[in-house]
Image (cartoon, rainbow, N blue to C red; front, side, top):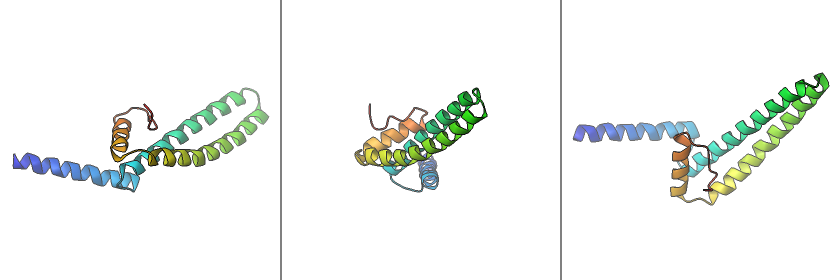
Length: 115
């Protein structure tokens, strides 16, 4: 039984260390903020790529314009995402942040604190 407890404790310690290395923070709310920002940036990038693909159907000039617009949208999205994630996560309790991280780590889309 002691051996199982030691293995379990080592596993928990390893998981905590890996989370700290990945997120550079110990707090779950900080981890949630980073996950939300990353998720929103990925969505913005996907939309920009779709826009570029559609614009390429209309020629080279439209494609260049779409690339410029996509770069602007991605930049704006990044700063807005950070602000939204920070303000929303700051409103959440420790337990809510832990639940949200569990949701994200088990493959569900972020809820952004809303259910």
